[in-house]
Each structure stands twice: as C-alpha cells, then as structure tokens.
Length: 257
Ligand code: ADP
Image 1 (cartoon, rainbow, N blue to C red):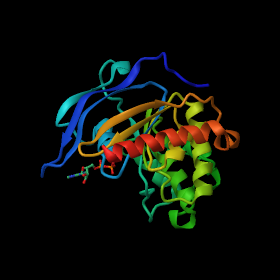
Image 2 (image 1 turned 90 degrees about the horizontal axis):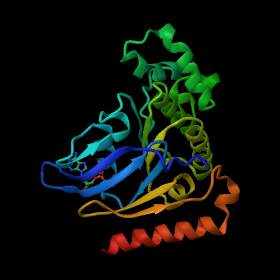
Image 3 (image 1 turned 90 degrees about the vertical axis):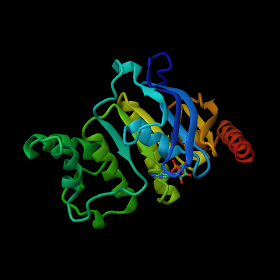
Image 4 (image 1 turned 180 degrees about the vertical axis):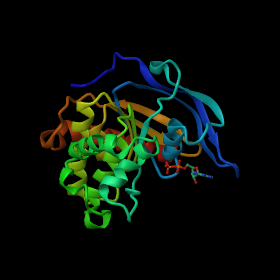
C-alpha cells in the first residue's frame, strides 16, 4: 500500500472561507490537512464549493478568510500544479503533441528539449502512437488522457482533478480510474479529486471528504483503508459496497442538514 500517512501535510487549509462578489457564501471554516503523496476525494452536492476549494488550492482564486499553508514545502505553493477539468480543454486546431507542449512552451522550453518529455508523458497515458493526431480524431477517453498527459508533462507534485471522467461512459471511466491509480502509485503525487460519484471516490481514494452546502463545509472525513492495488475484486467486494453505503448515508445527512 502506498499510504504515506506518516509524512508531513503538503496542503493545510485553516478556517478557509470564500464569499464571492454578490454575496454567495461558497465555503466557510474549511479545516483540513492533506498529506504528501495521498489521494483524497471531495464529494458533495452541486454548489457545495468543491470547485471553489480546488481553485483555492491551485492559487487561481484567493480565500476571503482563513489561509492555505504548504508545510511540506516550507510554506510556498509548488510552482507547478497540474489541473485537469471535466472537459479535456484541448486546442482543437493543434495536434496532440502541441497540446501537451503548451505548458512547457509557456515556460520557454524549446521544442527540442520538450520532445522527450512530451513523448514520456504520452507513453505514461498509453498514447505514444497518437502524438500527430488531432483531438477530433480521438475518442472522449483518449482526449481525457491527452489532458492528463498535459497536466503531467511539467511533473507537478500535486494533481488537482475536477470531475475529470464525469462525461465518459462507465467502462472508459473505470479504465481511466485504474490508469490514474497506476500513475499515482508510480509517482510521488498528491491527488485531490472532485467527483459526483460515491463509487468512484471509494474506489480511488485513501480519504473521502464529504461536503455539505450553504455554506460549503467538510462534514465528514472518511478513511478508505483498503489496500492498493484495487482492482475488480475490490469493486465487487462486500467491503466496497459497505463503504459506498456509508458515504452515501453521510451525503444524505449533509443534504438534510
Ligand atoms: P461545486 O463545485 O461543489 O458544484 P462551486 O465551487 O462551483 O460548487 O460553487 C459553490 C457556490 O459558489 C455555488 O453557489 C456557485 O453558484 C457559487 N460560485 C461559484 N463560482 C462563482 C463565481 N465565480 N462567482 C459567483 N459565485 C460563484
């Protein structure tokens, strides 16, 4: 098992709140620590602030109150944070290679120096033969893999994923879940994964944070201590079903509260 529960917190949210202009109280008093190397999912009803929390962690928006700290890196947010969204957000006019080159190009890395890194990222998501394809020539699942390769190419220590597989069919989604776990176990990544799916959260994570709305906050912090690798046997186990039921109940409780 790749649990790093003994290591220092990478991300620490201290009483984080966010009120948008217009007055929406999207988050209130969010307190949590995310360990380096861990896999944490956020689940909760629409509008409970999952994306807002992810964007605060990414540094794309600032909290209105409280603070976010990075103890494991001496306080500074890592320079590279990978962010994967629900839609693959690829440039349709550019080949797969150039889509993945973009974050390196923005860092002034030459095409020649970038090439082995791009090919390595493509290999890691199983698309090394598609560097010269255009996004329209790929399936939805393949486009999502390209998007993941683009997030990986800078070798970020943190990967933030906002419902990355929600638009895909179940079969493709399960395959990408497995591939993601394989990648995570091979790197020293910290993954924060937003999903609507209780099943997906339990399958993937070491911890599931169940959020409630109005104001958005963390209601439950549930450890999923089943060993990795987690394959079909885990998906079909009594243990898995029980854990999914537990999280569904926590979600319902949040919806009622
Ligand atoms: P979730 O990801 O859980 O669906 P969000 O973080 O997207 O939730 O949104 C939380 C709340 O904040 C919602 O009520 C949403 O309408 C509001 N919100 C999100 N982004 C903005 C924004 N840029 N400006 C104003 N309100 C926003």
